[in-house]
Length: 147
Image (cartoon, rainbow, N blue to C red; front, side):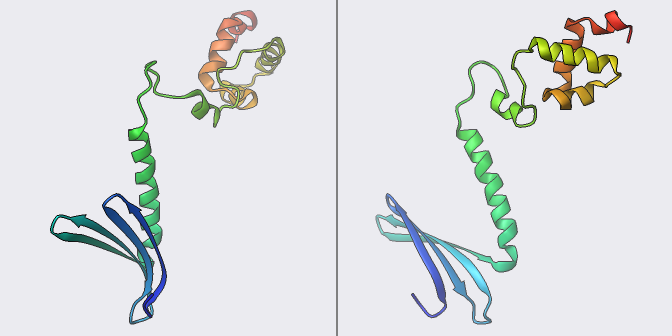
């Protein structure tokens, strides 16, 4: 390592090598230098990117977003036509797509009679508002209690 190099690492994949170097400028500022070296028929082709300390946070944020999108685009499309996954929905609605129990129905009826709104009920039951309204309709609670 040279005097201005603080850290260095590399990845070699096929004919490409990527270098990640943390360096210090002549003024003492830290920066990250990412280099690509690719072996060609006539020698080597080099590309370099320097990211300075003040830009690093934004660079990393944008890189993470890009990698997330890249992963989404690489994943095969679902063949069932759904544009969502139960796991993803359960991150916000813990009981989504689980069957309603008799106990749940009784509790829903009681809370509905107390005047709880669909939004509150959704939070209580860990389901979305549409599921709550659908269950209220199925149990005919509005007709039964005139609400």
